[in-house]
Length: 230
Image 1 (cartoon, rainbow, N blue to C red):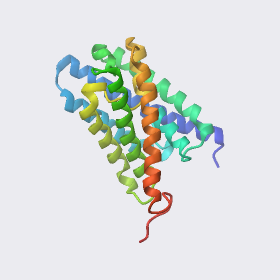
Image 2: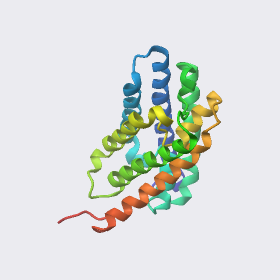
Image 3: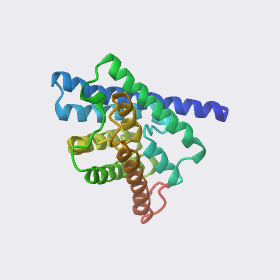
Image 4: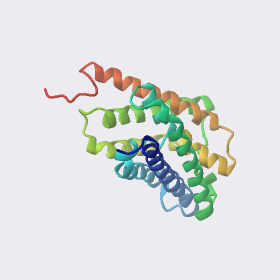
């Protein structure tokens, strides 16, 4: 049996690899598009969705593939993740996002503010949009990742698709972060920290609401932890 400390280290390392990949590939795509125009908005959105899907396939069985402090907090708040592991997960996610942004700046470039999320709408609108998008993301995550009645093998595609969908719609408005770590890394590297507070708070609120809402909806038909044999 693996010692608890080693198990947590293994999980946190998986979270760091996944979060690094998210920032490096997603924000890297933003920089590449700013340099060459070869990807376009649809292409950048697809990269964000694909990297999430790929890394869930790769690490979901190890750490749960959160890659997002808002997701970790929502899972813990809804009783689906132990609070004692939250500090390690969030610390790993933030450091990995920062490392990913540094790698983008050093290897690809600093255009597009290293992929930083900067709202183009009023701050109140940006806050509301991030809450709503994070709500839908966490609703889907909770449905496919923690409910045994859902198709678990399709979780990566469903979650990656949700990320891409939100990026397609919300990317031009807020950057469609839905993730405090994903925003914080590029913001610190590029110095674009003026609106960071929105992306630290709104995704946490939206994710908490999404996890609660799915739990409520699923409870109408029975336990979310039991398979439906009807």
